[in-house]
Image 1 (cartoon, rainbow, N blue to C red):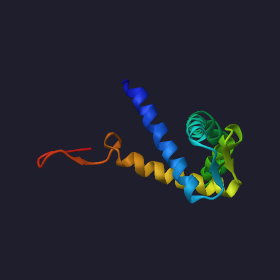
Image 2: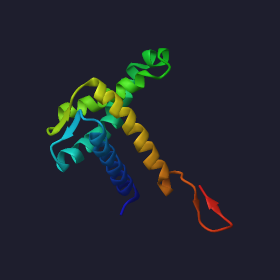
Image 3: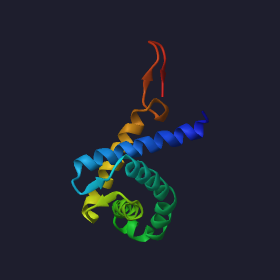
Length: 131
């Protein structure tokens, strides 16, 4: 399989897992089924890749004034946008999206860090360590 396609599928799976776990931790997040969860993860990935950088650039002054904390608001807005776009994804409000976005960012970071291809240290044998 092409490396780019497998990388895309891996990130989509991690985002799907993150949203699924978040739906169990936050009562304000609900999915009507697996298809809505998978579509939500896909749309959130595209929103983070396309819309989020534009919003970040447009809000750069306020982001600098708040020492970067406004990025958390942008992340929450991305989740709220996806909830509006995807049928079957219900979100109770801004604060649920805000705290869920923090959880999703941390959870995704930890999962991706643990993957061998993403920088986790793997001991191959007693003499070599690869990073």
